[in-house]
Image (cartoon, rainbow, N blue to C red):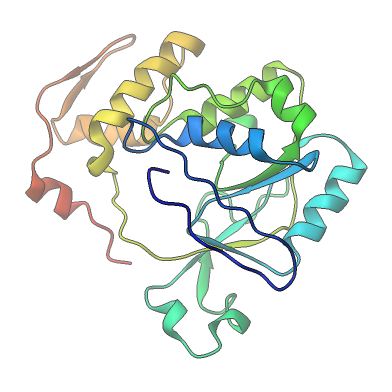
Amino acid sequence: MNEPASQLTSPYFPVRAFEFVSLEKLPLAAARNFAAKQAEFPFMIFLDVDCIPSPQLVERYLNAHRQSDDLWIGPVRYLRPEATRESDFLSKLMELSSPDPVRGNLEQISHALFWSLNFACSRRTYERIGGFDTRFTGYGAEDTDFGFAARVCGISLGVVDAMAYHQYHPSYDPPLNHFEDILMNARTFFEKWNLWPMDGWLRKFENAGLIKWEADEIRILRKPDDSLIQAALKSN
């Protein structure tokens, strides 16, 4: 997204890289739709760029798809800082990582907890859902909206043991570095579904005195300054 296409190679299969240019800083929804249009195989796997697939990921997704044409997600484990600097780290991904605190041990999952970090579906299912809604710009809620849209279409959401390992990068709790994006996308989601998404983050924004959150309205009281954003930086 908004970067030159990398020259990637693999001894096992051909790799094609595309440059997706947008006026948005983080055009997640539009970029995924663009990627889906480029795909040549009728079954697609979406993996965020900062994730490393396990050796079994592709096979397990394909096996799940052969059972039913559903929307599938796989678990994610988070690599510790400096994990990729370990010698032969690819053979130690499990021991160098920890499970997602919310979705780590779920065999079944609700559509409201769909995440786009590591998922797969057929082109037919993707098109039935309608792709990602490009009214969501920047960070937040576009994947929850995709899950809600799948539920409305009657598409089941299943969990596959297709593990991916998320590489460490600085992150924030709450993500004050995406403050305005989250509020804008929360409003878009509420207008569409009459329900507020990301309620945990919104509550933390409210508790910090940044917003006034009412039943059908959010007002910005003040924007987070650099010191407040840095204070929300996770330690690991």
